[in-house]
Image (cartoon, rainbow, N blue to C red; front, side, top):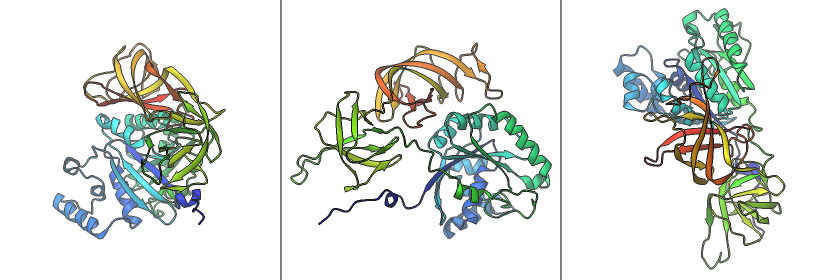
Length: 428
């Protein structure tokens, strides 16, 4: 009997969009997500009933949709978001994973966590206050993290009488600032998350706006090209050896494809050994795939018994990543107790590979307000962004972050506490 062959389309029948929300405190991020879920009928009745009860208990005049995502007790008490809240919903067109991230400056590190895997960032701007420091900070982080699509939602338009003039002023102010950033696809949508204008349904109060609603944009934004399908990269996460009679000689290499396309018969090179082989099979859930591409999680077998272990990388022969122990990167510092230390030693995690490193140079700190490089101020503390140079104890196999977000990023870990202290993006 012929073995069933999976088609790549059957691997994922509906496209998944990961997006994050960001903005300053009280810009309405949680309310916006609550409105998206409510108007798209993605909230269960018992969840909605619980939100109604909580709203009445708090003395809110209307149903407080922000309570849909504010899950921590301290969040509900203060009416703010502290931790990253993830929510899943779907429409007939697309599946979605939302990361609702905090607005307070001391929780900016949580925004980095929530945005690291996002295809799209929604940055909220309060129509009354315009572009503020946190708007710039979150936009800079979105740019550094290489988020391909950004939507600037100018919220609370109901509080400025749905003014087209206010919308245009904020739009122009943001464009002037963002011209210095590496953000390619930016869209502006005037909304009222509280009332639902231009969130899921078109607004009757802003006839001057000729663009789409937020939900329409989320359902239709083109994300198929967001992953690198050119440079084939497969960091090995684990080696599968069943040790059974049926699979006596089976040796599979499992992990997530970080870039490119892999097919049976492809010539591949294993790093760091440099040994070459051919792909014998590409499998998912024990069944062969025609091809595998980022971000699919698969098992790969090779025709030759070469030495491959966790932390190694399988690449297409002739398409090699950079290999070096000296790394130049941008860093967002996430430790609230200690600043980044020059000549400090840290553990490093890059894809599936762990090693140690030392900070050889702090090149500059970045002023998030005007994007100036502060070469005289190299004290990088909590939420600061800067450029560093490190040297690792073992060679890394990497690409520039703007080419591949997976192989171009790594984290720094404080060895004594095992706390993640830095999120880093490798420069080209």
